[in-house]
Length: 264
Length: 315
Image 1 (cartoon, each protein chain N blue to C red):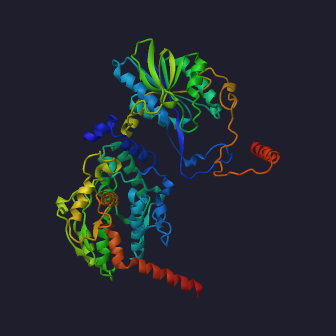
Image 2: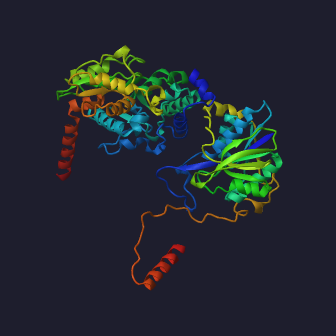
Image 3: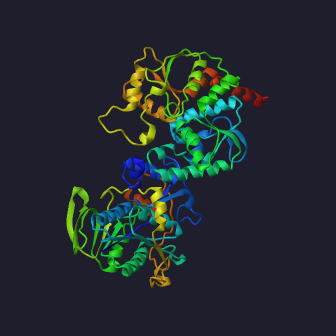
């Protein structure tokens, strides 16, 4: 059986940073990049299932949507024990929102036909927490979100899992395969990928695909294929509060004025 | 070898894993941006030469703790002012220094160590210098003994050896006789690993203090508990910390004023142990460099120089 794990190369900020000239993101010079923290746990969970099964019974495929720089993330997963990687990218994909990314991943999944897809619950930089569940929606597969425990024996038609709810509640559920699960932090203890392991992993195959290879049109990816667009990214001013005084009518007109200012 | 095998299989303390990831990403164990590495060198009254851009006699390899740990940053500033006062032609690598990797190798991450060593060797190859000096015995050990295997062959001295040299040559004078009772803790990587026992003791003797050896010293010294990567991993609860064991030994010396250390990691571990073992206010932990600077009257000299400059400006 096959487990497919989508992974993302995420940015983390220096204490001090500057915005890009277009004001829509942080200048990349001020970011450190690494695999999304949540994906460390989904990759580990997949590898654990593989290691518990008979040799060769489970294949773990890691997939990322990103430029050549994202290869380092795939290599890290391969070093930990994933079998092969797929990297999907071309310039038309720049500016893809989370749904467009899910659309691209869904096409990869149609090609690969895994029984199980494990994504991180969210990404540690943009944090939409949508890619995994949008993916399930596009595929028409059942999904479990924010999974904190997973019990699966390769070969079975379903698996059981637990998810953490608010207020200290836990939900136990079972799900028929194929399915998508989004994995919460702390579900396991991710192993370390040694630098030697990462170097040796460059011998493992990484397939490179474009949106054309996946049968996606130009209008289905990138800015053109996205309904949400980042207008501005900025550091909000902190500690700005204002006591509004006066008659109710004066207060209402001041509030209206503020709303207009904020809306721009 | 056992640690290497554990690292290859990915099995280690989660705290250590975080440190190794940080070193891999940012080149230092503090997970600080590379840009911040030389920040300590601001506000010392002069600019330290950039060894990447101009030739220097002494290339000072600063190391992680001396660059980022607030207590050791003070020592680094003092060492810089001391070298400046002594007329030593020295420089640092600024943002391009990465951790030398001694402790990375000790915890078994051989691949990362080699990457760090190759990176530093490539940086050093572009610089013109006569020798490397470092206040950090860990950096000293690996630069001196392990970098040659990767093609990095340098004369490497620990700061305490340079201090002794400067005192012997008269470049550093110690006009102020210090009236303290002090003892000295041998750092593992300077002492047992590299037999650097005598220069620090000679420097201490020059300050005029009343010096008492610890019962365990030189070949029989006792680790501060920070070596081999232990500085990154908390001690398990319920065990006596090596540092506490060590400061109790110092605390048994009647009338002790100072425990002199000679390594940024020993400073961190033993200063912490003085607090946790209840010796705060009984004796201080000081760097050898600080003791020598005090005997030089470095603060007075700096104040006098600043005053003279001010007068000149006014004239």
